[in-house]
Image 1 (tube, rainbow, N blue to C red):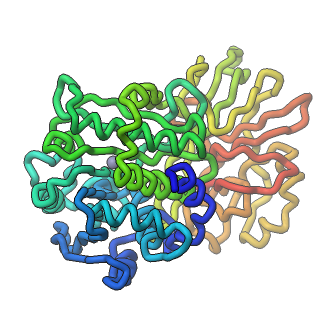
Image 2 (cartoon, helix red, strand yellow):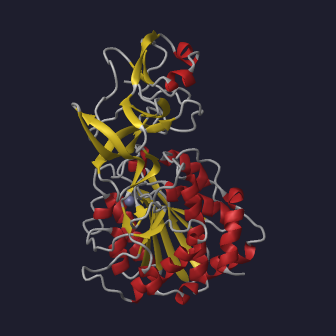
Image 3 (tube, rainbow, N blue to C red):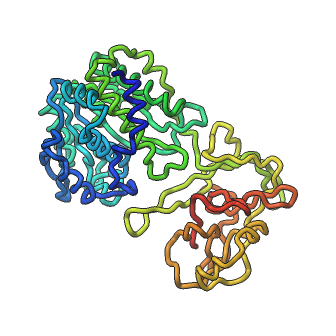
Length: 471
Ligand SMILES: [Zn+2]
């Protein structure tokens, strides 16, 4: 038995523990109630009502284990930060199972009392927004406690006086591990408990534990772990819980390529948290140092969805070269659970300090705006009969659409073209901040790439991700 073997086994067997219910990260309070109701006392779970949100949604306190060391884990105090909530339900399934990892389960549950509060902000989660129903950021409410959810967390902290706390959040997918192209897929922080950012034994234990978790994650996602800025925020929960004497670890789930629903990052949370619980149970964190913690690279925000390098552009007849970065925003659809992407130009100029999840060197490419196909389209079926490869090769990026069979803001995933309704004659045709131009990148007059709503298309390549927009 050792932590390294535990991490390897968790990684190998993750699928057997994954809670299959979740299909997107925009799940609601009602979705998790049956999952909580199914947590059986036979498996050691004790479920209590902790209290109610402003909109009267019940918040549960789930307890497991009989050990002397108390660990409190809470997720989604920001309603649109759902990754770790899914991981907590994976962890519940892990502890409900019985297999060759039973010896690890026993070590953890004999040494620790685990206290979980999944989805602390159910009202925010309902509409997938950061703040509570009162539109107050819970993480700036640790002192005034205006939100009922804040009072519930505070009273549980007071009641338990836990040894360790896990404050589980999501961060922007733009974050990098310092000035590298690698996304900060997981970021950690042992929050400061005062403005001088001193290190007392409480904070030091959190730092040592993070060093252990970083070691585990480096074996899976080398170079993709970062550390949050430790500026003291007097109103935040993490900082105050550290101050109140609980060694507190902040985990932020960031970005990972082609993981829009963060299901892979959720798996990393699952592994890192379980490994941390084992490290606490075995006091293994004591073998790690604060120097190892400080050596974790700091978070920077250097990553964008797409960067075009050294593109030759034109301003009223004057040529200039510039890098162009595109970023994407998630727009929630009417079902409240799915989303589409809207892209926009984020920056232009010398972007040598930025990186893209995708980058294209335009040094030898001609850049032009996409063309609108002249024929009017009256249905999606008619569109689907077009020869997409040929149209893309000719530089068409948008279609005139007069049909009634599609009302959404995004275009069905199998159609690469923007759709222009009504009076719209073309998408944005300026490379300017906040605009969303269609670009055609050609090499010796042959179209190589088309940028349509920030997604890179190639004439002969089938779509794999992204969406065009309906204007
Ligand atoms: Zn957050």
